[in-house]
Amino acid sequence: MAIGDQLPLVETFHTSRPANPLFCHQDFLEKLAEHSRDAMGRRAGFLMQRLAVDTARLHYKSTSGANRGWRRSRLGGSSGSHFYAWWAPKDAPPFKGCDDFAAAPEGALILRDIRHHDDHSPLNPQNLTAHYLPLTIRDLRREEYAPSPWSQAQARFAGARQPVRILKGHPGSGKTTALWHAADATGAGRVLYVTYSKDLATLARNHFDRYCSAEKHFKVTTFPALVREILSSQAPVVSEHQSRQAFLRDLAPFARNMGVWSSALTALYDELHAHLIGDAIPTAIGRFVACKGPRVPDAAYRERRARYLGPNATDAALEAANRLARIDSGPLADRYFPELALAWKAVEHLRISPKIAASEFDCIAVDECQDLTPIETMVIVQLAELANRGKRVSVPVLVAGDEAQTVRPTDFEWGWLNDLLHAGIGTPTEYHLKSNLRSPRRIAELVNRVWDLYAHLEKRDRPSGTGYAEIDDDATDQILYCTAAPGAELNELLAALAVREGLALITLEDTVPAFVPEPLRKMY
Image 1 (tube, rainbow, N blue to C red):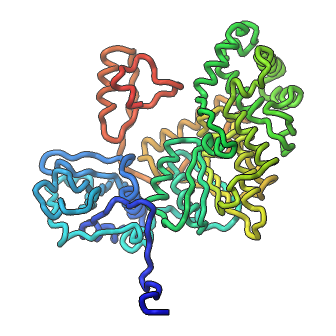
Image 2 (image 1 turned 180 degrees about the vertical axis):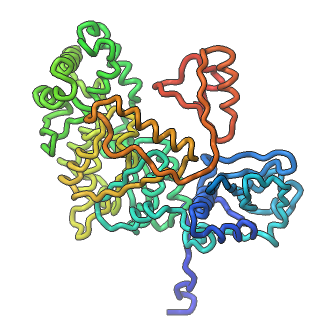
Image 3 (image 1 turned 90 degrees about the vertical axis):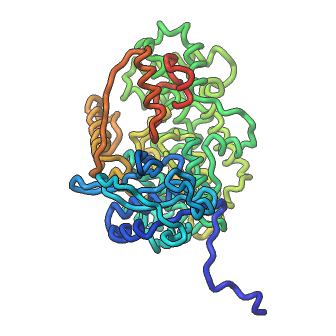
């Protein structure tokens, strides 16, 4: 081999897209080194990772006066002593007139110091060349200057070797970031990452592109897009709001005859979505009977749901479904539950004609699994079965979720998920994240107390496990509760909240309430 052909002695590392350049002041690095073994250091490491990958969703406090332009990100603390990382983009006010900062790469972020929350003394940015060290993604991954951003529980899940792993965790426990880390840590060259949420898919795409090796291929997709790819379908995605409205419109003439459902037609839609259509799978597994089409047979539905709803409500639900079925000759699922109908077709397609590039993937990761019904979960199971064919070592299947965080009518249960995974892929091993890593103490306590509301439900209807998450942060925070009627005062309050840094307005309805002024609707 000629000298010019020799392999490089220095290991190279490239990402698919460039990360945001980071420049760390020596003061920042020295204080970070002092906390290399505690939770504050881990939060700082995580902050640096997020700054390099995506700043859009980072929460920070602004500054004023002589320090105007610096951003402060909470690192937590203990015993009432809290600390913040001070940082800013290179074009922020603290660097105006500083030629060396202006010459920094586009998108550069400057990490200046770690300060106690009471310290607001003027902060001099000093000189970029003389006082700052540039850090790359390779530096962050090797933990040369910042500690690992992962908790022990997250690292344990990511470093495990069981082929089928389930990660359970409460809100703010770090399930999603642990799943990203685990997918990367498997060493797989081709990873399929699936979630129902477009927002989560975007976050995952940014993470894999800017933090992981470009030599790996991460296919990030939403579940509806995956199903359409399997079927080579161009069918538009139908929102559940649209499907529910069609259901309510067609059922309205019969509403008075729906028994206990007469005043709860939305709940009836959710019931049928989860149990009459969503529970229909083509193979008998666990509690599920084999179905010939995307609808559970009436007898099987009545047998299983009567113990929860009672015979009268169960019969009324079936009567409503049968009334709707007689309106048109097409399948009930196609008209009112089109996404579930497509999932059924995808499972059938994979069973009969498995011509899809599933075999190209050597890892499958599913985030927010509680948003999938059984028939949708079967799509993932079928893909995993295909990916395992002809392989001596099983493809890792990583699943993360929380039974209590469903945002779709799936009536998700860990029990049936385990049944489907066991029957199709292998017995899963469970891992648990028990700490709330994201929320300050008061917010974390509020999240814990919400679990007390389940005491008003029958035990069989509650999520399994415990609702208490350990609180990993002792930082100060505030929770405000107010009531207001639509009008000028509420509009003024919403406008004031909408422009606050790091805040978003959230509605629990399918659509933004009509009383919200037009300029503010984009904030939801």
